[in-house]
Structures are given as C-alpha cells and as structure tokens.
Length: 110
Length: 113
View 1: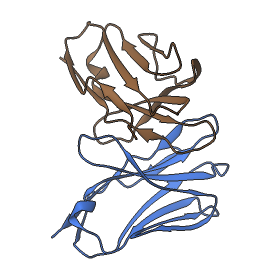
View 2 (view 1 turned 45 degrees about the vertical axis):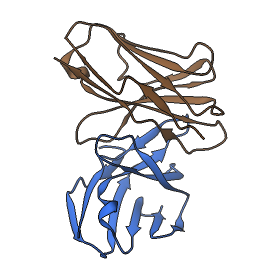
View 3 (view 1 turned 90 degrees about the vertical axis):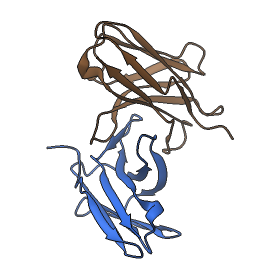
C-alpha cells in the first residue's frame, strides 16, 4: 500500500465549477499536509499547507484535513482555465522529506 | 527574491555517460532536497542536506548516484553510467530548518538514449 494515494484523473470541469481534489494516507502519525500545483514541464509550486485537522482558506482555495479518516482535500471555487494543472498532495514526514501522491490532472474548460 | 534555480534545464545523454546537475537554493535556506519525478507520477524523495551535511538518502539513490553540497550553498547531483531508466525530471527544493514548506526549482529533464 502506498503511503499517499491520489486519483490521477484526468478531471475536466467547466469554468466556474467547484473542484474537489482528494488524497488518502496510511500513517496516522502524519501531521503536516500540503498541496502543490504543477504546470506542464514546470516545478511544483506550493499552494497551501495545513497542520493536523481542520480547514484552511486562501482566496478561492480551501484545504481540509480529516485525520480520523486519513483524508485530505483541496477545494477550488469559481475555477478558471488558468487553474488547469496537475495538483499534488504531499505529506511532510519527520526527517525532512515530502511524500507525494501521484497527482490529479485538472482541466478547466472555458 | 530569487527562487530555486537549476541547471541545465534539459539534458540528453547516451546510455553509459555521466551527467551532473546543479541546484542553487533560495539564499537564506539551509536545507536542500533532491527529488525525481517520472511521467504521470508525483516526485519521489532522493536525498537532502542541512548545510553541508547529507542527512538522509533514499533507497532509490543507487551507488551510481552521488550528491554533494560542499559549502552549504549550491548542490550537485551526479549520475554515473546512466541507464534509460534514469530518464526523469530531477527536482531540487529548499527550505529553512524551522519550516515545513519546501520550494521547488524548475527541474532538470534528463533523457537517456
């Protein structure tokens, strides 16, 4: 079993839709959760990070962690074509490294 | 504020050749990380440094791979006797030691023919 599982998609939505991206993880000791956005042939860009359970909001983006079910989510409101990218969830493992999911490819159609 | 930079951006090499990549982290960041990403997958951790010290190495980092950060600033990743399976994007990231946020460079895309 992979430590972090993420549906690779692809996910296609119309402009203005609410997007929900999700990951599950296996180790209940994980506490720091991150979302990165990666445009084609570019490096990942940090979007948001959260600690432990709860929600964190930044503009159109909301990150949510449910530690009881080991489930992390990223919601994008009023999605735009410029949001089209691959979204990677990542978990910080004590010792310094990030453990990434496979990434979900999102396409927002005008 | 200058971000993480990597050089070269693209490298095409023949199987069996040695290649070296360079990463320059954000200037005040004392931690530097190397990851590898293959098509359709998330980045996989290879190794990381705090200042000059290499603190952790993944089992993915075979003995053909070596990384250095001699003065605690830039880092190099060398792959000896490249194989076609080494074709991937090699990503560098940096952070401070008191945060969990890692900032990535644009990556070096390696193609082994």
